[in-house]
Length: 141
Image (cartoon, rainbow, N blue to C red; front, side, top):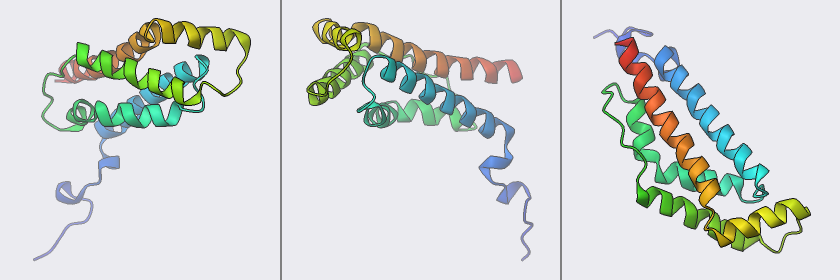
């Protein structure tokens, strides 16, 4: 039995242009979310929040890398509640950290509104990522 290195059976994901493009888009998604969290004054918790979001949305994100391009599921009300609670907990853990006046006010207002604005921004990032990728796949087919 002989094996052919570099053939279709042994190809690495990095050799797939679709996989590389998907990786670039995932990095862009995470960068956008990190930027929003930092702008809101949550730099201390940004990596933990991103990790939790990745775990929460992991199944939907992984479906995008599979060869079977299933129709992605739009983020739900439960997802929005999860994100809002995650942001609230992160802020409460770090609220004793001194911040600039404008940032402190924004975070305090966010706490009072349940971080509605920031959670919506994050959900829209995931929604755009999931459906942009799906639309790209449909156009390519």
